[in-house]
Amino acid sequence: MHPLSIKVHLKNRRRDSVLMTEGSPARVIFSFAFPIFLSQLFQQLYNTADAWIVGHYLGDRAFAAVASSGSLIFLFISFFIGVSMGAGVVISRYFGAGDREKVSRAVHTNVLVSLIGSLLLCVAGVALTPVILRLMKTDPDVLPLSVTYFWFYFLGAPAAVMYNALKGIMNAVGDSRRPLYYLLFSSALNVFLDWLFVGVSGLDVRWAAIATTISQGASALLCLGQLTRKGTVYRLQLRKLRIDRAILREVLRMGLPSGVQNSVIGLANVLVQTNINTFGDVGVAACGAYSRIEGFAFLLIMSFSMALTTFISQNLGAKKYDRTRYGARFGIITSVLLAEGIGLTIFVFARPFVAAFVDEPESIAIGVTQCRVESLFFCLLAFSHCIAGVCRGAGKAFVPMFVMLSVWCVLRVIVVTVAMRISHSIILLFWAYPLTWFISSVIYLLYYLFSDWIHGFDGKTLSKAA
Image (cartoon, rainbow, N blue to C red; front, side):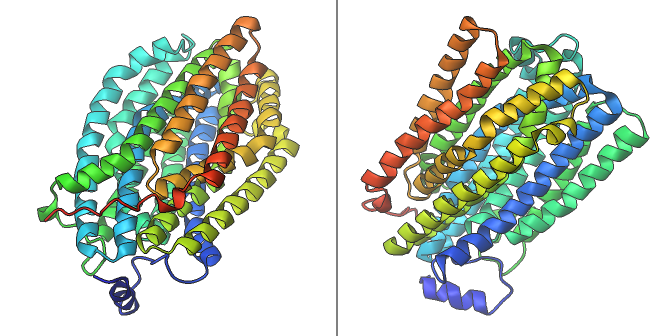
């Protein structure tokens, strides 16, 4: 189907997708990124509420058990999120090119692969969690609570993986509003269940994980309901669920680099978390508080990165190169400025922000130090992620994989390892992040300015599967 046919089709019915190849690039990117930002904001809010309720009602030790979860959860789930990102690029490109048949094949392939992967993740997460937590040198006082939390979290991991896969499909065709509405509901549900299970009923930390699983399952079901509606561009039908080999090859070519990159970054974060764990539950709680605060800045950064990936992919599919360049510049500059504004805010209000999560004066002091070391460099974090988003949208997924693996993984682990041998100071851990953000930003800048990323899909034919 020609792109014009899709546009006419969209005008004649309720909008379930947005063609990002028309209209003001700035307006299109903002209108797409803003709902993503809000959805991630509410997701972060309910994650924060989860941690706050646990810390408030069950104490700092329980908070440390939940706070240490981020790096390990990211290690397990990030691979599947990366593959879904690859599927999103394929879907966006076919959508921009006007090929609804290939959009449908990519949707059904992605859903089935994600379903199989989520079940494997559930088994692996439950089986490997105790071993990995011990290898991470988790404080023995915190270990039983952490194992309990993770077991129940990973039992519900299929809900998290499927929600991200289904949401990614809608985002790929420009629909970022419905995932926001669904997440608003699940966020409110999660906070209510946290309060009910932990605050009112006095149940232990496993019930915080159960509340998260229930809420993620609810949002996944809502996404599934939308995807199965008749008349949508991306309609999902159970009888069409099969793996299209040609489409799968494209998805893996785009998604495997991101999946591997995310997993190795997750592994590097686990190694850094291992060093943080050597500072006891005080250090773990402090860094956990900072990670919740940083998460709010990261939301904005990832919103523009995801918007740029979809925008670039759709417009390159339609071969609108000048529009692609303009949109990339706008998204990068806007994200960098907004991220730095958030960083300055965190720098100024670091103490009350950290104190909202932990009570011990020593934990507060460590958390404030981390905020003030890292927050002023959020502009570099935003720049790196946005260029990575541009590369993925242009079919250059191996570029961010190489940069992230070499700098954010290998180099960061080397810096942390050497620093800890020179001096067992937690501040040295904090400085490893701005240093690696700076190096990756320099590499990305050179690639963006001097490579021919704009023609990333030229010479690559779309899938010819019959």
